[in-house]
Length: 456
Image (cartoon, rainbow, N blue to C red; front, side, top):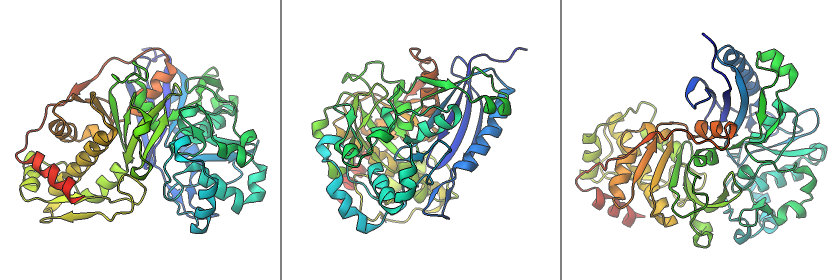
């Protein structure tokens, strides 16, 4: 039997896990490998273990080379991350955005950063504003910083290692970095003020082939010599990609991209309603268009509430928590969101066992998602992408809270995979796969939501 032709390898680096996915020419997953995304605490500061990811990735690629004829490799990564490189490699480790940068630097950076009205990047904790990371690295490690030839957004760092070509791309630049003006589609004043303009490579579309795979890597992995390396994309924007058929039109569905972060994206909604204090922001989609967004660290918070031994609950567990008025109030992460700075709390009778903890985490993430959609003014259909599509109650509960809207979910627990496939097959849309959620009618759910909102 002949091998599948023109397959795609997706390197998907999320904040929690790294995946390598082999997808055939019609968008079906042929194979998938996973590994934890580990942070190293040694050296200058907490940083990503890029060499472990690299070695693991090449081993998996060698395995994939025997399964299909691969036509392209597409890197997709989380945001708020960049690599400083010279011609030989990293000049500084790739900083973990959850590292608490020195408080003494915050006041200095606050004077340097552009206004929210220009970048729609809210001021965020730790290193979630990439501009703050870079400013601190330039100040703390001037010798290494001066060696840098390029500042590469994280997807393009991996594309550079695979292809040898440095490129920039708007989706990672426009992800609460302070470096980009989404509405103007140009760099912010910070880039020129800091003297970084020369370090950012020429912008390329996310779907642009940069080069063929480095010949040594092709030989090492067994991948074809003509396998192309694409520029790559920010992960939430990969999830949004299949829903851009209507461009920036207000009729486009809102998208809930779920994973470590839950990001509500509302194409077509005006930016003038965004509020910095609520962690509302404008991302840039793959076409360069500004997209109003709001987010919270839902995957991390779900895990915190559900606990390590939690398992999917039944309807009766959800109903019990609603009846006994047990609810979780934000927030359970210190990484931003609309209620940043508040300490999370569980009120009412404590959940009994893993099933009820899963139910509590589900209700909490549904309520937070509903809150974000309402704050954005979303009245169109909503599509759930990502890991929460594996939760049988998430979309049905959201549908029950928003009965005037169609709530759907895709069949892809990682919307990033579909988006990456689309970059390789630009102009082709995957077959419409997914389902519309039937509202889960639970007694007292609307009152439960109102009680939760009042408690905020």
